[in-house]
Image 1 (cartoon, rainbow, N blue to C red):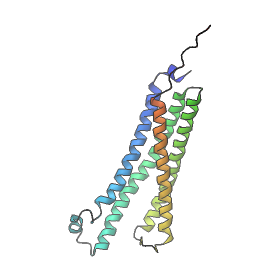
Image 2: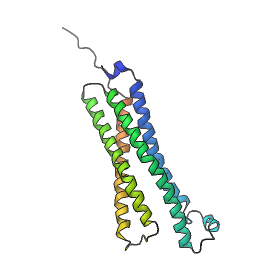
Image 3: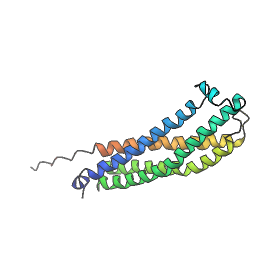
Amino acid sequence: MTSRARGPGVRVLAAALLGLSLGATLLSWFVASSNFRVSDPAHDPRLDQVFSALEGGEARRLALRYVTNESNRALFLFLGPTQLAVSALATGLGVLAAGRAGSRRRGLLLVLASMLAASVATALLVDPIVELGREIDFLSREPQAPDAVARFGRLHGFYMLADLVKVVMALGALGLLLFPAKPEAPKPTA
């Protein structure tokens, strides 16, 4: 049974799930970076007025950063397992949509497997990043910062790299699902 025999439904559903996961990732990038921007008194001087009860600019900055960090943590604690489930479902449907043979099928399966692996990696990194992030919330970020700050930076970098791989692979899978190969024309018999 080929993907054409199943109809476009499975392919479209797999593509929709990939689009949902892709959109959620891109939205998380925007929200996480925006949270830091809107909670920075350098970008919004009114924050100093609103939080004037907190003594000193550094205390205000730390308090605002803590709230931002917790907001981002809640986002990623929800998003990690959710995206993993959506990616796994999209991969399963993509396998069904891929049909049985051909290099295009192998390409789709490779792309889906890579995306799923990146989703697993990001999901596995969320808890350690959240835990370590809470440990370093009030530590200095100066050049002589504690090793935990550097370790957090490395974990966050791995997470972002895996997230980027996930986005690229999801885009590749979307292309393969939404623009399937044209069926070969029958060969003329002599």
